[in-house]
Image (cartoon, rainbow, N blue to C red; front, side):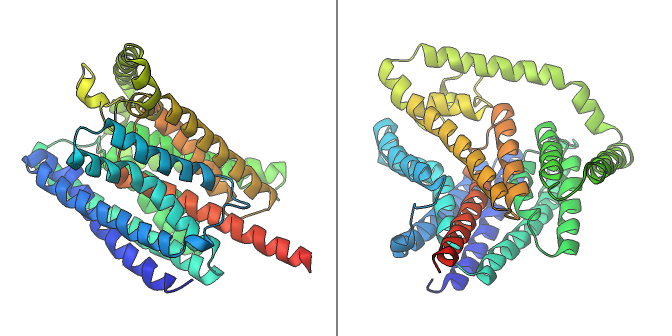
Length: 398
């Protein structure tokens, strides 16, 4: 693959800028009244990333083979369908172009990382993991910089939504091959997510680690597995207690004590969105109302806080079915990784579980700032699986 190393390094630089502008939009400028300008910078950088990855895909389109793939063809279908749907539902050319960026970055990220990893050697794929490890560290650093600024502005601890960036980096962190670096990054990310006090992120992290530990049990006897699970419970419990009690003065516990009221509010938002969908025309039910239209039409003035409901209203029944298909295919990919004893299985399976849970309680697919990081991971994993399958088939043919 021509100059893949240079492309990966250039893409890493773009993602650093993307993270920087994304964090300052979500966590800083939103409190100072300058969010529109910051979001413009973030959108420009995101559009540049989409353009860069799209050009790379087109240059290497001949090497983009769907054979042996599990998820790729459905992601490609999504890209073609979303182009048509965006044209049909956009108000004008400017809005159409902006929506193209929002709806395309996650599938393009998947396809791009798939293209690289399915045609690269081991060293090239190790470079990708290393670069995302660097990006995860940048994400942690930016979190503290922006969180401190936001705290000074609103004098309030916790519920920091930019922790979703870190959630999408979690699967990448768990496949870092250097064990010392892996544990350091896991600790940094875990502590930071706890400090964010974002309940969905904390639950998502706990679910990911639990599924990861449970999935990585292959080769262990039942006693060893029981010991690992006990160690996991004690370690996570101790970490939670330290951050909550010593650093935040019980703020996390306080937020979880009000969890039920927050869940009820989200149920009301989802129900209102479903009622809106039910009152829509047949055409709108099929092709949707357009990207992020829930927030414009919902009586609460908020998004659906649920990826499944948001997709149903914004993009219609066709895309809702396709979304479920992609999730099912990701689970199938996880199973195939398990069968082939691929080291990526635990993190992949845990990442799918993470998305299924978070997609119900919040929104990921709606915001490209962080979702493209998770879908890039899925593309990277499937590309590795396809490359491994090709190699195995070639050996057997000899």
